[in-house]
Image (cartoon, rainbow, N blue to C red):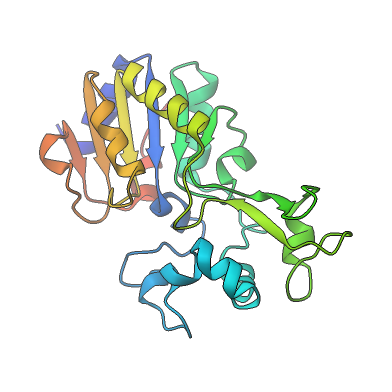
Length: 239
């Protein structure tokens, strides 16, 4: 039995499925990932992207942060791909209980999925550091220079930057969903970003599946490992 047939059999068999996704899920829609050879971390910038996407850089070099953020994180005109669409349909059957994502692009919700846990926040929520007023993504991405509130405070995306902690409530929900799942599908992530990468350890269900172009540290304990493009896998799956 080939890999796709084995995955299809697992999906058909299980009624408590959780999907855990990383940047590789969004690359099918045209967004750059981070760690692949063509990813953001291997591009040349004035500063390394990992430094730009840190809390201290945001505070100390806000203008430079926003140049990079507006150029590389704007997903307003990006459309969901075959993976997002498949997961939306699977959720509607009642089999997919949750999507846990490391992505901030909102493509799962754009596709129609409802139970999406965003570990690293979202570009769609922004707030003033001074007064707390909320702003939408178009306001931020269409602003000139540093986006400012009407009170003149600096607006910050509700995105978890390096040096910042994940939201405790989101983490608890993610761990709870993973620990209850029969089938955990991990896709498009190298499983190297801590603490999100450690969540797989809470899985105690029937099948662990990893779909990723490159090897991960968890391949050895997975029931099925598929080293293929995510789009090539999900376009062959049936509901």
